[in-house]
Image (cartoon, rainbow, N blue to C red; front, side):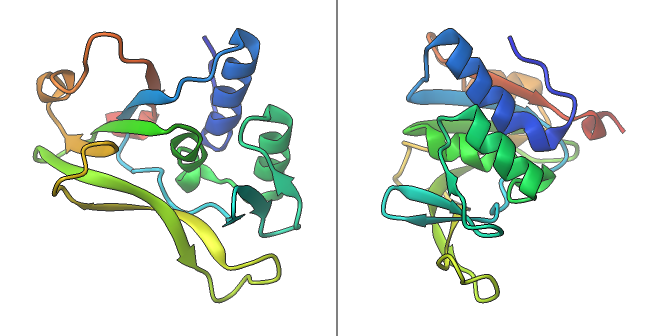
Length: 171
């Protein structure tokens, strides 16, 4: 188990946990108890299979806690984008987001890149996540609800679960 008290460091804690346990799941369910999605675009560009820090040009390896630490310290990964590297690290992701005053809604979670017109020195294919109306893609899902019982139904036997609780949920 890893415990992290600062949201910016969530992806670091994930990577460190995987390193210590010598196991990196390909499929994960993220139980996200928070008033925010934390799936914003970090300052990371993707060119082919390589990730680059848009702020200083350094290479980022999501499998490496040392690399993620440097990205966090530089400001490339912040509070609002702390879950995005974890989503990009796994082949299949289910984000179950419990937030205040949210009606049950299921979406597709689409990993990709988006253009950044300001910081282009190291490329403009900034990694991003789109949350779109659910159609046919059930590989990566995002479920938003206020109801813990509804959220519980999304878990399947054998799911690897990463839990992120932000105290602003309780305000």
